[in-house]
Length: 274
Ligand SMILES: Cc1cc2nc3c(=O)[nH]c(=O)nc-3n(C[C@H](O)[C@H](O)[C@H](O)COP(=O)(O)OP(=O)(O)OC[C@H]3O[C@@H](n4cnc5c(N)ncnc54)[C@H](O)[C@@H]3O)c2cc1C
Image (cartoon, rainbow, N blue to C red; front, side):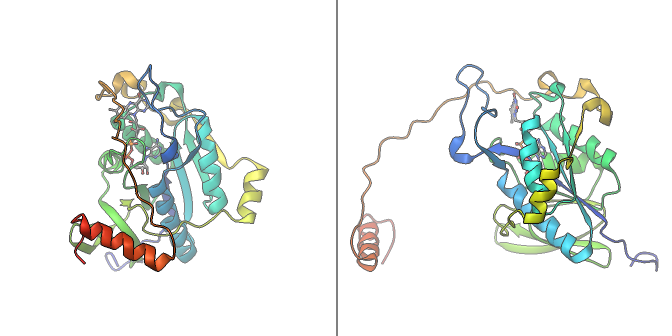
């Protein structure tokens, strides 16, 4: 309780999700040396699906609204629609050609401005990092822009007495942290099993209108702060690492015998002690 008044309720949770190429489909354009994003099978960045699952569990408990937010080309609608089919209430895509080539600095700025336009939020959830650029900058960058307390690398969130409590993964175990709302947390990959889209969710998506598109002008984003030219980092060179061929060894036959033979082989190579 604060000042003897009623504890703050969890009314709106915003989940930032990025659509990424499926890990096994990652390809670099040999000419531009940037990641190919168009025409490759894509998915919701896996830790962002875990963040969405946490938001949906909080919705089940507290009745809060879940808004999913992404920044990218209109092909990202696919992931936002999936998030709505999983149970999010609505979604926003910040999409504008002038955002192209933005690195993490403009991305965090543009998402923060969009979160402010959505407004009325109590909690912002991000993934710990993406599987394509993997910097882990964007969540803390948003918290910095919005001046929000943040808890990173979390695997569980509870709302108690108007406060956010989160289990944080540390090097030697886990720790519980507590902070006020509004706040931001970044979510560990694999900390839960994201639910599948429901039939009613899919019908909602089929009816259309579940993704709202905003341009930079709609949000009031300063064009001088986004895009390739306003991104302080550059990709100087991309190299393809060629792994040396490996012989491989297959252990056939009865599963128990095969596992025993595998363990003995690893022990013989000094990899494990039996
Ligand atoms: C040096 C460098 C140069 C780059 N150049 C280009 C380029 O030329 N063209 C290009 O298209 N990309 C480029 N990128 C990629 C671009 O910077 C990233 O896509 C973007 O800044 C997000 O960074 P990230 O993927 O590392 O996110 P992280 O910081 O690893 O993401 C953490 C979390 O933030 C949220 N998040 C991140 N991005 C989004 C998003 N777009 N929408 C919603 N939520 C999000 C998610 O919750 C995510 O789990 C470049 C990246 C780097 C490092």
